[in-house]
Amino acid sequence: MFHALYTAASGMTAQQINLDNIANNLANASTSGFQSRRVQFSDLLYQSEVMPGAAATQQTTVSSGLQVGLGTRPGNTEIIQTQGDLSSTGNPLDFAIEGTGFFQILLPNNQIGYTRAGSFQPNQQGTLVTANGDQLQPAITIPPNATNITVGSDGTVSATLPGQINAAQVGTIQLATFANPGGLNSIGNNIYLPTTASGDAVVGTPGGADGLGTIQQGMLEQANVNIVDEFVNMILAQRSYESNSRVVKAADEMLQGLNQVAQ
Amino acid sequence: MDSGYYAACTALVSRTQALDTIANNLANASTVGYRAQHNQFSSVLAQASGAPDSDLNQAINNYGILSGTMLDESQGALQKTGNNLDLAIQGSGFFVVQTAGGPMYTRDGSFQLSSKGQLITSTGDPVMGDKGAISLPPGSVSISPDGTISSNGAVAGKLKLVSFPAGTNLTSAGETYYSAPPNSEAASTDSTVKQGMLESSNVNPVTSMVELITAQRSAEMMQRELSMYSSEMDKTATQDLPKIS
Image (tube, rainbow over all chains, first blue to last red; front, side, top):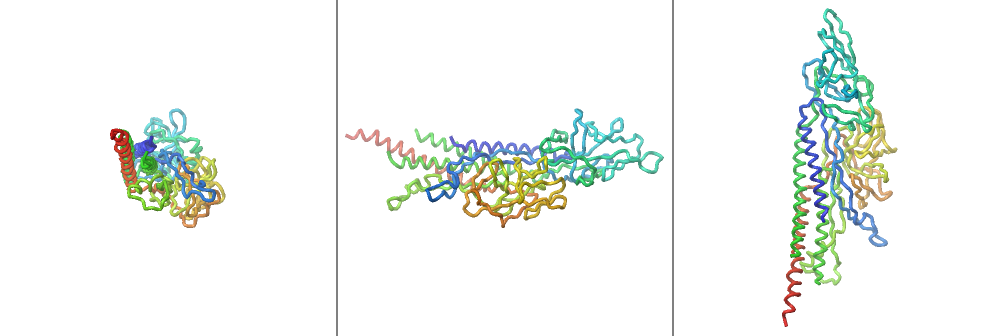
């Protein structure tokens, strides 16, 4: 039977996954701290009917081989590491990271998760938590009667208490970075977990010598999804799907014609 | 049996192989760094008698077998990604990748860092620099057009870019890797590296579609040929001739 049928099917499957990924990127275009992903494809094995460089005669070699590829497969989905736009929210407990780095979040199973979504609120004890109630690490507790909260670009959190002129430091936000942030595991809720591919987290001071980004108070990082690019990719995925299905149709018609020869 | 019967059959087989190559090109239209393959047909028999071919003979015999597939060396479109470790080559060069099966060459520059800070491909094979594998300290990476990699302002290595003389047989190995005959590589002089970009597949959907239609229609022609031989001529010969007495 023709490989062409299977080859085209591999192309259609790949474009289906591509479209799924584009749909997820577009669906999260308003998720703060979301980092879009891109599907990478690679070609499959080749059937070499004549190897390039094979001997044609004792003195000469063939000018090019006869290699027929067997299609494509989705290789990996790479996390796009570009900076999202910062939008001003005016909320003193919204933090954006300008540059590289992740906030550290204590998950309910005592694991540390990493996120770029910096929208925090105090819980009933005054400790800063995410919208899901998970604590920011190292824990920062805001005194309940604080009148003003300031976060410096290096992550220093200070609170002004009533009757006091100088703000008192109540904690420091630290950021984590990875050798290969593209190898992080997304578990939803904007949280990433480290893997052997990403390497262990390296924790440091924002804006410090480790090359970590700085903290911007009162801002949130928007998703780094580029809507125009996603639309272009969506059109390409759709057209590529169509051209692959056209190959299936052609192979089918050729087989059909072949069956009619025998009649 | 008529020899044309076999000629049409061979040509039909070559058309189905051609369809396989076209299908592979279209399936890889979104594969970064993929090089399209083009079919080459050749005639079954060289003109032995020296007499000119009839039109029908030419149509069947001149494209009788698929003799080879040739890599399309043209530049693919550069597509902006914004990722610092996405690299595209403008020019004829290739990146060198060390795999378990020896050095491989690729145009797919969607590189990443391993957990040890080594520059690797998306399948995890180390990318070669002038002095072996490249390790980068954490921090911002910038890559100049000649392939020099700097991390936090300090030079961390230089990408090895190689080209092959015209006519070198590159073998497709999957994963957009190509292998080349030993000692055929030379430092590339016409290649520049573009950071934050990837080279799209150089498959041209229009020509692929035209090739597809050509293969399909010429397969139909061969099928018509076959049925003509089998149902009209041979049938006539086997069923009608005995009745003439």
